[in-house]
Amino acid sequence: MEFLQPATWPEALAMKAAHPEALPIAGGTDVMVEINFDRQRPASVIDLTRIADLDEWGMDGAFLRIGAGVTYARIIDELGDRLPGLAMASRTVGSPQIRNRGTVGGNLGSASPAGDAHPPLLASDALVELASATGTRRLPAREFYIGPKRNAMRKDELIAAFLVEPAKGAQQFCKVGTRNAMVIAVCSFAVALDAERRQVGTGIGSAAPTPVRWPASASSSPPRRDPSTTCAARPPTAGTPWRCWPAGA
Image 1 (spheres, rainbow, N blue to C red):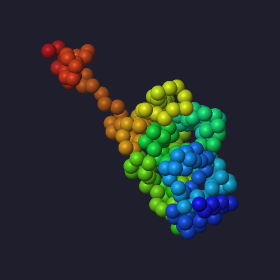
Image 2 (cartoon, rainbow, N blue to C red):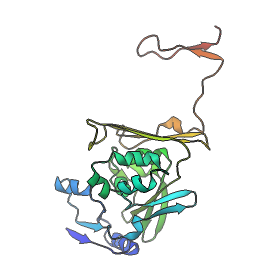
Image 3 (cartoon, one colour):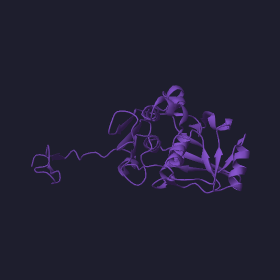
Image 4 (tube, rainbow, N blue to C red):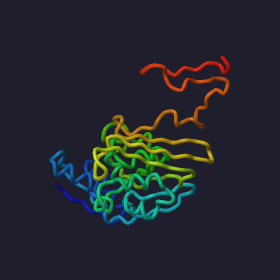
């Protein structure tokens, strides 16, 4: 196995261009598990832990731009008030040791349907910033996941950062697993309310081949019941649809 260790971001991009098969590694919390269980044996790896640019975050216009190397622990400590949904999800990731090493950038790179960071990123309409030696592009998170553990990165690209607007309303994250901690999600769900736009964003994990959004959340406002109708308190029998009829009928 060839081990590459760039000291700067331009050097990392040049190495990735020269070695498109190289597997990037930062926290290593996913990659090392795959290697230890002999699920993959990359011909070469690129160690990104020395790239200072990946550890930075700040405002980029209306968005928070968060480097791919920012750990879950830092998101909890430094960004919990601005991104409460992502901070909640970060608290459910592994153990304190894993949260001190693992990164959202790594979660995006792995693209597992069960990744804890994916639902809050989808709910908040996050963007993923991808870079190569030839340029940079930003892709909506909903277009980034293309299959189980597959993403839309090109062979010569690395994840530079993700961008998300600071919360404009309440956010929540829920994870269901076989135990309360250090568990892969059986299902997870995130919701983000945007009071200014009157929108509801959602993200769902471990329920499809990729992390997904609930389609109805894309509408500009939640559906409303026609005030001229009255609906039954519950379906008359299991498996039958809700019944509605004109008020007063």
